[in-house]
Length: 328
Ligand code: 8YV
Image 1 (tube, rainbow, N blue to C red):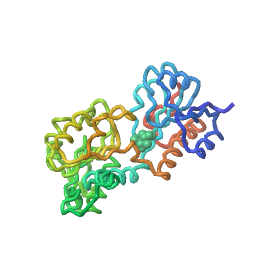
Image 2 (cartoon, rainbow, N blue to C red):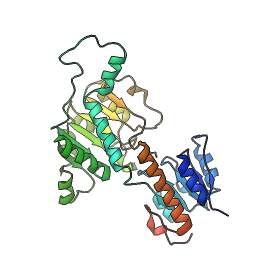
Image 3 (cartoon, rainbow, N blue to C red):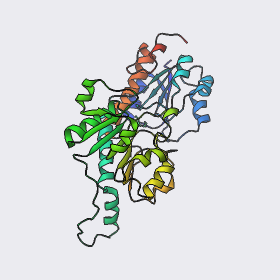
């Protein structure tokens, strides 16, 4: 009998077909977002889970799922997984790093540029038939090339954004991170380490790429925004909750910063309705990694982890490798 796995949401048919060669697969063709109780109930009948990075695995879920051996996230972020609890329960956690780094950095850069150069706002104006004549300051935005790019969170994606800014756009790149990078890595991405206050005060364009944790909740709130330049932009491609959305809405409305580019939101897919009435914000539905090739690579990496672990006891990108080899 094949091991039973569950795929939390719809995913590429070729990846489902590949998984079916190895497993008895329960999929979610209807693409219904299951409640935590439904997810837990279904999960309890399976040994493996293919998760989109939004399906929770915590102590209560683990207690209800004694058969579970692995949860493979199709995402680099894993704030849906309580990894220490999974380790205690002998359940392997895997994520999908690296394959999305450059694509996500592309999007972060695009969102920052769209905010700086007022792309959404000017398109709405044009579509509404309001473009009647040329004007010297029509949607005059902020310079990107040669300006100061601030990056908060300097992991793989942060570094890829830094390279784009320094090498492609001649920007001065400053960053803040829990730990400072080695001089070699700093030189390779043309970035200079600064304290958080200096980052906020100096950046013309601030891009957030910090992983979500309780400690990172509201890393950017009213006090932090108050330290930023009134001409600055703020881009968040990290996670909802890193920014205090309510405080950001007030700041954008009052012109305390110039604009924002946001791919992630507190409580998404619900959105604070305050954003919708603002012109100086570019809004996208958590799509930073979404190119066909990248999402396919992420899905195959999650599948590799499931197949590798459940058939051979090996995984490509384990988050708690100490579980491998330990018996449950
Ligand atoms: C995912 C992401 O698409 O990888 C991440 O952490 O935020 C996105 O790339 C999203 O989590 C859904 O899987």
